[in-house]
Length: 222
Ligand code: IYR
Image (cartoon, rainbow, N blue to C red):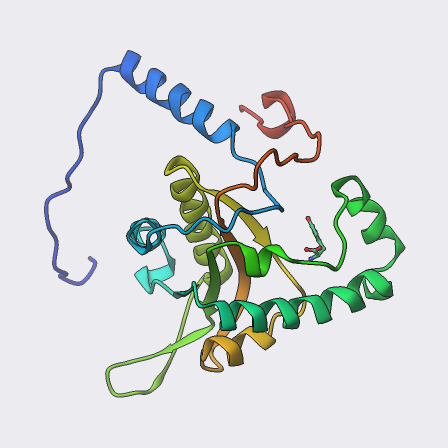
């Protein structure tokens, strides 16, 4: 028998099946329109929208419910400039050879390069940190479980929330991202996983012509 533990009633509403399908299709239609954007407008975005989206991200399931994430939300121009400088330094090394031919070949259709002006233009940068370990009430180190999985799920919810709120995002991953700990003032147990750029797309922005795999290529029904 599992040990006694505190419980509370589940807040769950069973929907009629036709509504379920309609809602799943409606959400699919919304999410199908999400595209990574690399050219942002400087138009400000209210902090309350960012906070609501971060709280949605924080509702993600996580290993042992440890919620091993920190979202560093940056609107400050001077901090954004430092992040751009740090990221572009890494990206220059990446595009100059660190990536290797095969990786650069895989990216070629996206038309990316080491220049990342959007890190200053976009109104918000959200650096998503994974807490590789935590501390208990007495300050002792505690193990965290399934950290990349948990933080990945939370990031997916964050992106979905921002998209359906009417904002564009870019999942940006300058590598390595250690420089973000110092800029964001995050401790050593935290590792930056993703730098999410958030805002409105620039006027008349274009995106790479891509397609999404059909159901037969991404699912196996057994
Ligand atoms: N971080 C680099 C390179 C890059 C890597 C992947 I994988 C992408 O999907 C896109 C870009 C950059 O941001 O340019």
